[in-house]
Image (cartoon, rainbow, N blue to C red; front, side, top):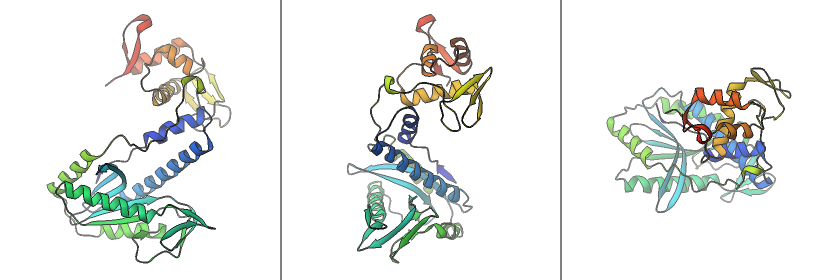
Length: 304
């Protein structure tokens, strides 16, 4: 049973919108692709764990703080007698392990994910002890990408390779387990300790004037959109979307980048680069949002 679902990181969502509407620096773009690849790997691992049939509680994407130190856990699986702790890596290519160091071929030293696992699991132990809990923990690092190879892999380290993931979870699935109210209380306690605002966010500063305006294609993110009566048609990939859906998506994208700004007809008209008439925008907003105020002071809020 999935007790806490994984959400797409806010930082990744914001960077994704910025990437298609302004020029990111090479460092910012690299950071975006790294976040994206990491998230995709975690989602792949989730697709395996959600198939577990044994009594268990699965908690994904946790962020904790202990002793003024913040650390993230990709996935936890709570069983009757033990907590399985997973650090998921979506690395691709040829790597090797030498002298307690982690290298990408030919010889580029990378952060050692085993050190990250050791640090995270140690902090997790401390967190549990502070809560007066001390269940056994079994930490592992999962290399999820089938295109990953690790040469000279240490045999005494808790590593799960791509070809071993299904087998490992099959083993978990076969363990005798019974989930009691005590386990649910622990899961609830961990969710309540989860920190919602990550101190590690790295989003570039930007202003409204820097952002490219217009409706983008839902499929390929192109700005090559034409409007034909009730449809937005992409000239690049030929994807079609209703104008109403495109307006609502544009509102959502605007709120991602400018969460403190009010939604008005004029705001969305300018944000869409005047591609859709104000009357049409007003009609769509009136149907899907709650109007607050009157005349020139009117704005729209989401219906709760």
